[in-house]
Image (cartoon, rainbow, N blue to C red; front, side, top):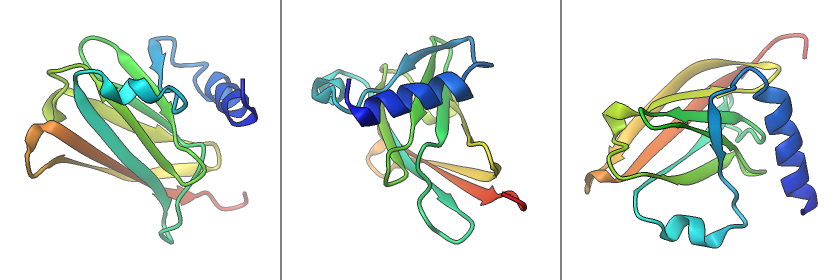
Length: 129
């Protein structure tokens, strides 16, 4: 396991302790992950100044299962969800200790909701941290 992967696992375990339903974690080193059929979900997490935020826990929930992702060092994430995981059927949440969520923007690609879905999280650093 790489140093980055081990760090991501540690963060997931620490942040997701209350997410017993989380069943899937995106592994960016698994290149074939994006070759699977389904809908590409991607996005980023930024703070109120526009800076990307690493290690944000992103949970995508649909009827079938929950997908737990962590933003990379550039504040970005991506994963393939099963076909039928449309913009309307997936609920997104973003969190990181020391930050509070301001808003989540979800939008389908111009090619339609079955192509890609972008989810961007806007977080605010809590004072005193």
